[in-house]
Amino acid sequence: MSDYLIDLAKWPFWLTLAVAIVFIAPRTRNQHRSWTYALLNLGFITLLVGWRLGACVLAGGVVAWLLARFVRSSPRPGIWVALAMGITLAVFVIHKRPDWFTILDTRQINPLLRLVGYSYIALRLIELYRAMYEQRYDAPELAATINYLIPFQMVAAGPIQSYDDFVMQPGEPRPLNAEAAMSGAQRIAHGVFKKFVLAFAIKKLFLTDFTIHGSYWILEAQMFFIWLYLDFSAYSDIAVGIGKLIGVHTPENFNRPYFARNMIAFWERWHISLSLWIRRNLFFPVQIALLRRTDGKKPLLCASIGFVVAFLLCGMWHGIAWNFFVWGAMHASGLVIVNYYRVFLTKRLGSKGVKAYLANPYIKAAAMALTFEWVAISHLTFFYRF
Image (cartoon, rainbow, N blue to C red; front, top):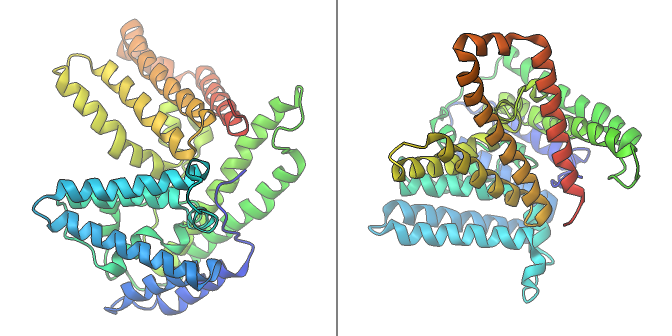
């Protein structure tokens, strides 16, 4: 039921954390801090996959670094960014649909791509190449490229740190004090409890991968959504806690998504780093391009098309299959409906009426329940092929 393969119950992850605390946390003013962190990240991958495949990961990092430098420094960056994006997307397709490439032997490379979370690496690569193409920053050093693409605490399931956020974080973080250490440790403990106690109990007691037919699927749909949040957000809690301990900024990924009253609010609370990535790299570019073509006369339609394009592609990011396309279509339609409904309410009730409407506790509770059910039902598509 989860796409990430790194087992937090095994020792490599926690050994890497211990080494990071010993060798990285104290290095607030050491010029070798970046390389120490890079070696730690590569070492973690090597512990999981062995030195041969670990060397493949290093080679991939070198290729990404070189491409980023070529995009940034070439007088014809369009050629290099097209090549870089093409390689990134080609590997992504191989990762998601190895059955389309039977002529290639992907028996080793595809498990590696899954293990290192290439779905997340691909999004970071796009951020990196776009930043270089737009010449917002100088080309990164090799160590910085590795640290951005495969940070060990964010490999399993994100969050997806933006390249802007990565560049702007201080090169010399504040020294670890007792308050920060306690905060980080508490966050890690919170994540461990959610994953190994709460999520584990729900999985064992209620989840069957929807193999039980009949009315039970209604209950399982609710419990799967709750399990997914607990399991997924647990990884994010652990990642954020580790970031606090070693002085590496790790973005928040969840903000009480069950309290969202509509789909727009839901995506402001759920998998926040992915939502922001979609907004930066898909929704806004499509919306702005359409607004320019229509002279800004049809903003609602432009936004709706932006939602559809962005979330159909988001569905394809989860998996290149019809069931994920349907998942994306469900979320896109929910966002479009909410957008049009907001306009309808404003025209019908006026600004004061809308405020009263939004403040009504019964309407709010009904809206939250409807949003919960829409998202819960959308997850059923993960288990069916069309």
